Length: 165
Image: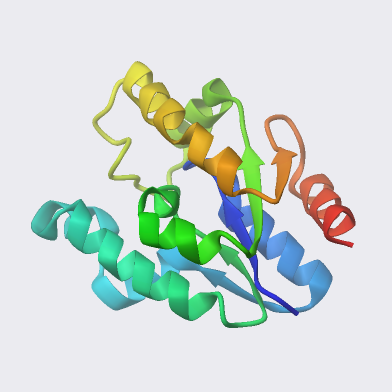
């Protein structure tokens, strides 16, 4: 099986949907944020101490490593920003989890588990601005786009499986 890569803005459901898809396909799952935390510690602390550029380098190295495995990969929301990552993803099974920005903000604000360094101290309008600055890249890189705004994880995972078949 070729790697299935989920992209989308923070709060789109990449972690949750990757779990569902991996369960259905009975395959390995790689949550890039989780692996990065294991390797570099807290992402928000790393951002603070070393900057976004250093973080993105670690992210790129992990992406290159992960795509060679038979797995479902939940990427970080900003993985699409690096040109090198765009090249890596160009011919892969990339699925964009498209979500309405208001829904994203609601999910981000209500998520007590994940602290997101690119959202923590930002106003809703700034988060939307960040979303719109990335939207075209998500759409450009996606082979499949799945709307996630008001749908349950199982429904989204089943649509992904159907579209990949």
